[in-house]
Image (cartoon, rainbow, N blue to C red; front, side, top):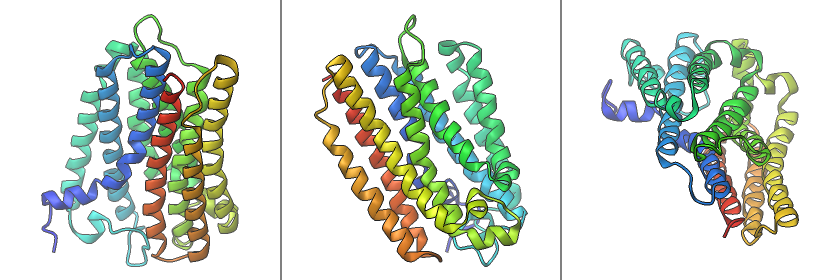
Amino acid sequence: MIKTNSIKAWFLAARPVTLSAAAVPVMLGVALAYKDSNAHSQWVPALLCLLFAWVMQIDSNLVNDFFDFKHGNDDETRLGPKRACAEGWITMKAMKWGIIFTTLLGCIIGLPLAFYGGKEMIIVGICCVLFCFLYTTKLSYLGLGDLLVLLFFGIVPVCCTYYLVMPEGMQTVSTEAILTSIACGLVVDTLLILNNYRDYDNDIKAGKKTLIVHIGKKNGERLYCALGNIGILIMIGINIYGALAYDADTKFLPFAATYLVVHNRTFAKMRKIGEGRMLNKVLDYTALNIFTFGMISTFIILGMMW
């Protein structure tokens, strides 16, 4: 029994398992900056970027919990993990205040980044907050959720973290950072693909036109498989190019095979299960795979300088 508005209720509402997806892009941006700056990267903005990413992820989860329940998506037919508002763990009024608090906290954490990256970082922060709300309320119903994942779990956090963490006078965005950010966004999107794959029937009933609703479940399976494989192949390509062009080390490259194995095994489980609540177990594996991708990619990046 979970007491209403208790610490445990808020902990579950924050969905801690999703925080790895927010941490991986920052981790990759920091690793790239550390390598390219010869270990002279700035650690204060790195910490601020990580905290901002975590708080905004929690904020997004609370917004999703609140508005999906308000729109009637989290009813008794829901197949996904239990949600705080739907289960009565947190009242709607308390959830509103929780959203206000996490939004303000994210702004407070992110504001000092303007000192390291200029006023442009304020615009980036505003966009992060804005799309945090627009994703659940509007854009996920239009099949644009996957594009937002590519942007805000790949390109924006990796490239901005890289730019902010680089020493003053060296701040730029390299081609390697852009390619890594795309790879990261593709891999993180497997989590959303699986979510929408599981919720296919419910989304059709609710009028939620996700990408999976548009392309169908079979193509959704193929897309899930392709995104994870393409993501790690990009990282392999970066390492091989570095070895050929700059004599970079490739000693951690074989570890990429580990991710290829676990991702494709998870894909096989997804395809075998096909539908129902058992896909939530595959969701846990996918979250772990994203973290595995982040760790392996970080070792590949850092290994190029060791």
